[in-house]
Length: 233
Figure 1 (cartoon, rainbow, N blue to C red):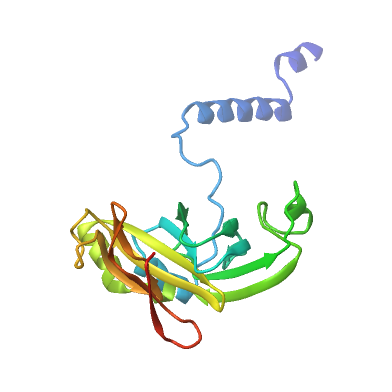
Figure 2 (figure 1 turned 180 degrees about the vertical axis):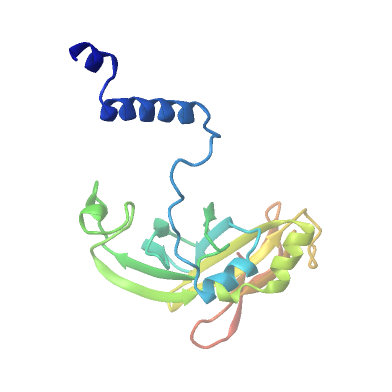
């Protein structure tokens, strides 16, 4: 009786052995697909679907920022509260150029704030629940939120898709509120005014300066009065 039991292992032991062999066989035949299903994503809102279609092919561009007065402690946040741009101090006619990225081509909204006697210490912003690099403290002088994506013309975006060019999002700080502009940059002399900029529009356009000479004055629309004012930068 004892010999018979030794040559025939219990059914439960045999099943475990067969199951393990099957797992090893299946593992060696893996097709390389996902081992787990992808994380579910939230469906886009109707507004975001429209923006995705409008800005298809554009996920960012060049950013140009200047100011009409000495502005300090400048923070610019996007609609999600991320720090889009920051600068300790801008003085006309100097400008800052950078690049940016955005889910739908440009931010939906931008919130601007600037201050005097601001502070910036290591981890100071993070310790106050602000994005790293943001300015804080002092006296808040400006606080504005303005739409951006909804203002970009469809004609500019369609021309970029067909004929190329570098999209520029432009910001100019005015004491009574920020100004937003945009254009496409191509080769020198290709623009309708002899510059390299196409579809220039918005609240302002900088002067066209070539080799130190002002070939075309700039302009801006006063955010309160609506008056169009020319500039040489």
